[in-house]
Image (tube, rainbow, N blue to C red):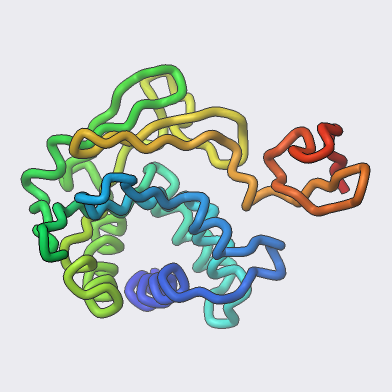
Length: 225
């Protein structure tokens, strides 16, 4: 698999995309907004980005250089995992940021699945060679694009399924999960509306979030089209 080329290309889209994906009818910007979380604490500089496999398909599906076979291989590499990009720092009185090193950050990280089961990040020895190459290839891209924040950003992987074999974070089906890091908790309710077809209000026809059941303004059940 031409993992290095595809990885760099995917990273550029992930952090600099400005367009939607017509084949998938998915706005990649909406996916990013829905999958990222930041701290509300003014003294903390946090970013927790859940990167579901569907994000990569929406980002790369319409690129001529990415074949269907290559995209399938890329997805297969990440399918066994739930992937996050995370960074944490403390903001000083003069806006300087002290970034938390990986050795201090990782022990505080946990993922709580839909059934309440708590999971810890996989160690590097538990990742496939391709998954390790992926995270390693992305790091210089992050540094170039985000500077010190990118230099201190870390990729965290969890097993995609809990002990019963159920998915921990399925972006296309109802559920919820939370991610804990450094005494902060970030939660997601599923499915992700950005990955679903828009629904429409029966009153005025407005296109609304595909995960919603009712119009928040008129209280009417939304229609799927």
